[in-house]
Image (cartoon, rainbow, N blue to C red; front, side, top):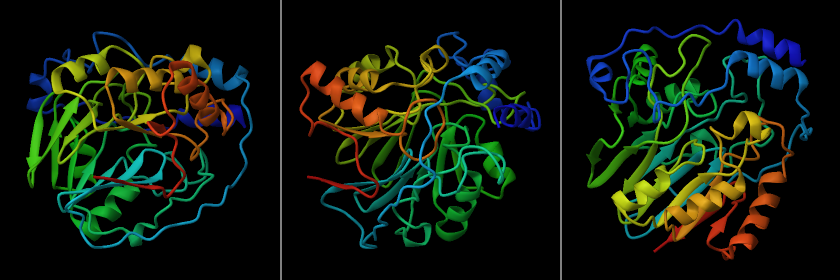
Length: 336
């Protein structure tokens, strides 16, 4: 099965390398690829082969039941509501606006319908049960964060504005999604009195073997009634401290806690729970909600390891459990 997975990668189709004027003018683009501090975060294909062939992976259950929840279609104005749906997908409701982050409703985080990481938990909200969606935030183009099948369905049903990193708009346009705004790091767009700021993080991008880092990845700071940090996906680096210094304390941070083993392969690109706690402290976050765990088996750790190691890290750093929460699927947070 490991060999099948590796061989399947060879069939991935590269994205076109035609770059927009905006991309070519970005100081984060070196003329060929985007970079974070001129570092190569992604591992080589040889490293990928080594991990997939010789790695030791803890099995996950095939399926875990999820009690799906209904969302009130009434718009939220006087509070901030945040519902954890699955993986890195949250519904954020504030100032009468409904926002989705990295939405994925497909059964696999993969370019294939027949293989690749398959979900073990259903989304906690059915796609058809969503309230009207106004904004969709996409942190980067990896398959577990940019699920084009879901995005097409959202576009057809809700006609939202999609906010993405530079270059990602091309994939969406090719799939009939026209209402797209692409941002460079530290650029902002304001819609209905809410500011969306795209900020750097230590990660990378690709949907095939030959399009690595051709599009920009990042995190979002949402400035509404509350300041909300949506990491999307990242390794640990000093960008958290820098963003606190530049933009202030976060009321709520949505940070990854899963998909981090083996560390020799994942450390530069994915936070482990201890590093997530360090990021929580760097951002001076009042409340942090964990994500990127328990949905798709992307790496080697067991399904319960992220929550177990998060609890240990909170104890180590003396942080109250109600300040950094690993949510259950469908959990709603009401923040006044």
